[in-house]
Image (cartoon, one colour):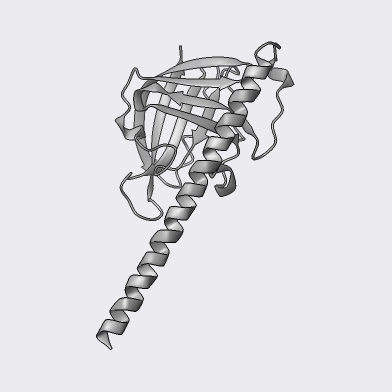
Length: 188
């Protein structure tokens, strides 16, 4: 009886590991496809000057590229921060502005996928955002850890343009993490 129970538990464990691996692989493929699409779009739009006022994005649409050279990341930016949007890359919090609008830009992502290694960044490291209306460079000025339901990090920073990155914390936590790791960067 004990051997039968052990075998059942092993099979259940393998099924769970297989499912998690499949979900991670599917997410990574989706992220790569979104990145390839937006890079091609940005190349095609490079010849045409696009103004901020002309920008209009729909929920789930890939809108740009986020580069973090210090941790070797090149990630698609997707409009929206719900689970579906975050499957495809870094999510732009819809209630914040876009680069060039001199206020807060908030980008969120999962700690175990797109933002793996975010805790290795240091003040002064560069973050680059590429969108149809230009390329914008930011320098990290600080980090903080807040409770998961702390919404005070979402605020107007006008006339200063602040790029804010948000992910779950602690990075090694299994399950829904109780805190958020926040990175702040000012436009160069």
